Image (cartoon, rainbow, N blue to C red; front, side):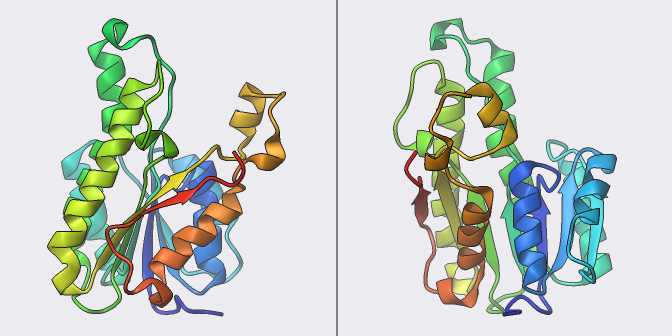
Amino acid sequence: MQEFTGKTVVVTGAAGNLGRATARAFARRGARLALIDLNPDALQSARNALPEGCDSAVFAADLLDPAAVADTIAAVKKRFGAIHVLANIAGGFAMGPALHETTDEQWNSLMDLNLRTVFNCCRAAIPEIPDRAGGRIVNISARAAVRGAGHMAPYCASKAAVITLTESLSEELKDRGITVNCILPGTLDTPENRSAMPDAEHDAWVPLDALADVILFLASDAARCVTGAAVPVYGRS
């Protein structure tokens, strides 16, 4: 199926593991792709891995810089026209000390990576998503958002805030026919996680392609009546 033919999909964090898997999945279904990340070389590598014939472009930008994000979205609009799907994949994870030993830098780093990037991108992109044309925003939260864990307070809090931001946006945009949802992944099967947890049951983790399938569902017409949802994707992890 080519259900995204004629649709422009913006993927942030496109050079990362999940960003690459998401971009490939959209490309296979006919989407035009705007790939955004910080590292130009890594972005070009991600673009080169897309299926042949995919209409795509790369945009290197610091998603923590509001002006850079605004300029990037303007460049996407100039290249492709209207934006139809915004997939906010950019984010990060880090364990930390106990909360009372957490520094401002450690707190701000995860709040910036996981929340401010979503805020900056939504703020810039929403005006470019046409009304009642199947507009979709998909954010990435985490299972850790719904139950705090020790030595993970900044991460848990930042991902919990993504759920609340998603809910607020869904209320603001529902009359424009734009849906806003987020996904709560369990442990993802990535090379980094396998290296960090070599003795874990890797088969129980969530494959990147499986998570990308859920992102595509939420971006599709099949999910046109789903908005404000926080969808758990835990596998057996």
